[in-house]
Length: 116
Image 1 (spheres, helix red, strand yellow):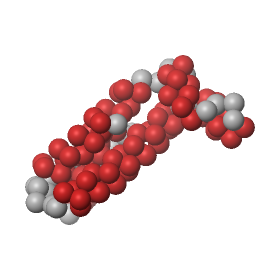
Image 2 (cartoon, one colour):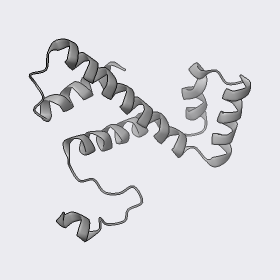
Image 3 (cartoon, one colour):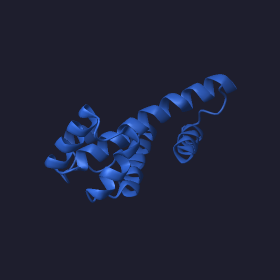
Image 4 (cartoon, helix red, strand yellow):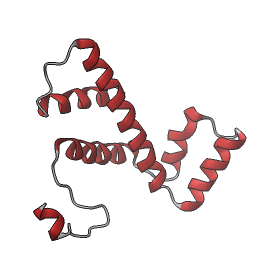
């Protein structure tokens, strides 16, 4: 979590947001960190094969999988959580900073969109 917090802090600096009062800066970092962690969670769930996603959902619902065991479940399903986290952080940062990133499905950007 500390790495994510530092990443968000760096994004604010790169965006030129350096003059916030300390309490507002910390609140902003905390809120952006929560958003990014949610995105990482969603990316990991999306990366699961359908049968494993269903197994995870059912396990969380019936209590056979505890929240603290989710990462181990995902690793056992073959996910590289570090890579998923890294990729999601890069996408989040690019969007926040206004950089263009290639769509996930490999399609090209629509040229009309590029001209706007």
